[in-house]
Picture 1 (cartoon, rainbow, N blue to C red):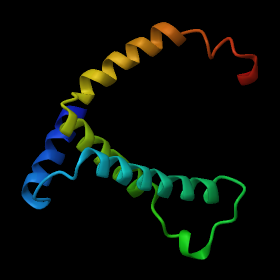
Picture 2 (cartoon, rainbow, N blue to C red):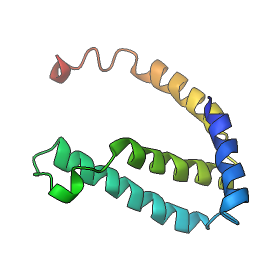
Picture 3 (cartoon, rainbow, N blue to C red):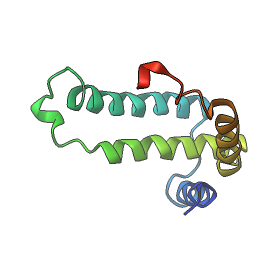
Picture 4 (cartoon, rainbow, N blue to C red):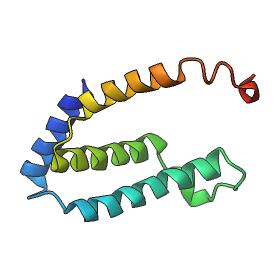
Length: 108
C-alpha cells in the first residue's frame, strides 16, 4: 500500500469511528506524546537506561504505527499528499546527499 492509501484509510477510520479529527494543535500534542513513547522504548531497550519490567512487553512497532497514524491525520487535515511530498523529499535528499555520507570519515 502507498502512503496515499494509508491516508485514505485513516480518513475513513476517523469518519467512521472517530466522529471528527482533533484540532491540528491537539494532534501535534498527541504526536509528541506518541514520539515520547517510542523514545522511552528505544532509550531503555537499545540505550544505556535499564528497561523496567513494565516496559518489556511494550511493542515498538505498535508505537511507531501510532506515530504514523497521527502523522496521517495531520497530513489529511492540512491538505498534504504525503506520498507526493515523500517522493519529492527523496529526490531532494538523493541530489543533495548522494555522496555526503559515503565521504563522511566518521561513518567509515
